[in-house]
Image (cartoon, rainbow, N blue to C red; front, side, top):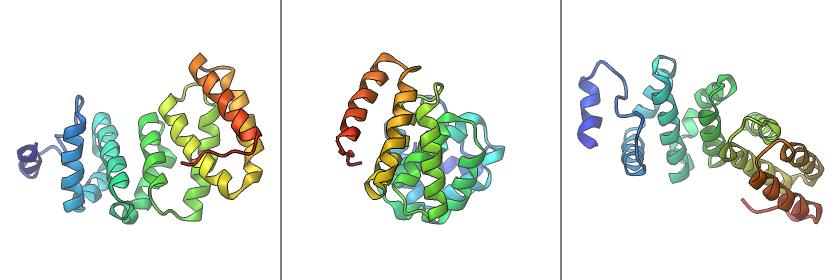
Length: 187
């Protein structure tokens, strides 16, 4: 993998190592490389619109793991990540952005937008479980600060559970019960 990362500089294609079939070990290697050389994350974000869809998805997967490794690694890239989040329709990129910003100190504007999107994802019948889960993390964290959000979270869970999988319905019912009793899960 490290040879492939080195070959990138000699290639006409940006980020050829961001490809389908990447495993967790490869992602860890790329994360380490991007943390050591933040210019790669900047180049990725600067050239985002020119990349193939799979490269965009895998790049955001890498950024998500970078955020989990330490928020400081992505603080300077909040604006381009946020701009991509606001304009993308790609669910995996939205999911990874929920995770990136959850692990990063963000502005009030970004936080408010993420909570707003989290409410929308919760009732979106097309949203994958992972995207809903990451949205819930945002909502639970917000509810710990602003308990007046709890009834709205319960309402979204009620509406969302009707059109989703049986397992999500069961999970939603459990969360509704906890929230109704005033318990907000730690995230």
